[in-house]
Length: 120
Image 1 (tube, helix red, strand yellow):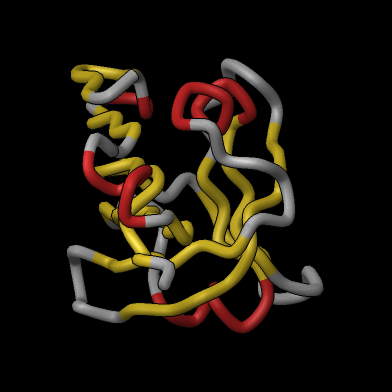
Image 2 (cartoon, rainbow, N blue to C red):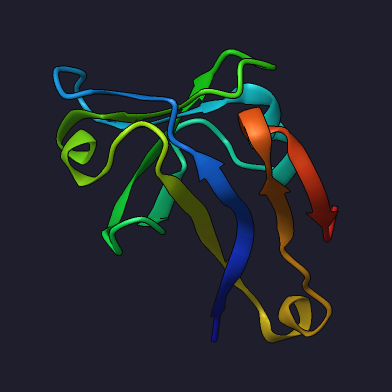
């Protein structure tokens, strides 16, 4: 039996833009993805702290060091520049793996710079 646990989380990411005409996904600065072990095209669950909207999509690698968090496609209708969002993804673990698992978490501040790290 597998257990689904939080694998990684980027908390309090500030949306830096949106593009309704893009085919979809969420663009995330590459260095932030690397820090929490998030791969390009990996499935993510996002929650908008400003309006309560939640959605699933996939991560697209943005420019490292840019701080960009861009809502693309239909998702761009679920928030706006300046909104704070939480980006999460989950993975299946065996009970033995789950026993000692700790997710990789970063908390962001101004300009989407890392303020805090856990499990990294």
